[in-house]
Structures are given as C-alpha cells and as structure tokens.
Image 1 (cartoon, rainbow, N blue to C red):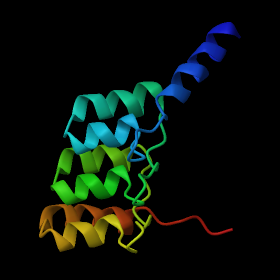
Image 2 (image 1 turned 135 degrees about the vertical axis):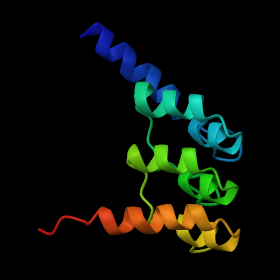
Image 3 (image 1 turned 90 degrees about the vertical axis):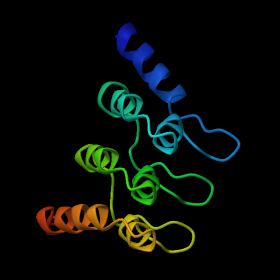
Image 4 (image 1 turned 60 degrees about the horizontal axis):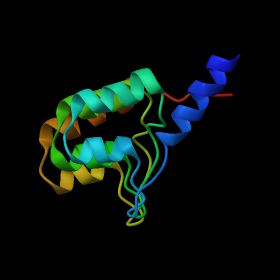
Length: 119
C-alpha cells in the first residue's frame, strides 16, 4: 500500500502546471519530445487531455506541429480529438488550419474507427 501511495503522489506532481498552465506532457509535446511524452503517458499515466490556459490540449499542439508520431501516441493513450480550445478549435481544425494533411487524415480515420458507445 505504501508503494501505491508514493506512486500516486509522484504522478500528481507530473500533473503540476507552469505559469502558462502547461503540464509536463504539454511541455514535452511543445518541444517534440516523443520519448518523454511516451514515458509520461505509458509509465506515469498522466492525463492525455489536460489543457493549458488557452484550452490547448497536447493533441492540438501535436496537430499544430504536424507531428504524426506524437498525434498517434496521444490518440492511442486516450487523447480526446473532440476537445476544443478557447477559440472553439479541435485538433482536426488546428491540423487543417496549419495545412497538415497527413495529421488531418489520421484524425479523421481515428474518428471513424473509434465510435462512441451508445447507452
């Protein structure tokens, strides 16, 4: 039980935000650090849907950068493509706005494959 408590405490520090509201995951994505993002998501288990003070998610940032590997990692780890930033843009909108056709295609295919469960 002690180890589980310690892990929860450590994971909580990985959700801390800087002055711009960015978590370590968002910072890793902004800096295109695939390995760090993978570690934070797969090993630490950080929230893939945390947003900064402008409402940008890690998925939107990766889409803006045109970083296919990060986009796929984030989607695989549960990033929600329908999240909107404060300007009302989804990751798909951002990819389209920046002319990243490959990212747009990945997001569109993901949206077709992952169908929300009906209750």
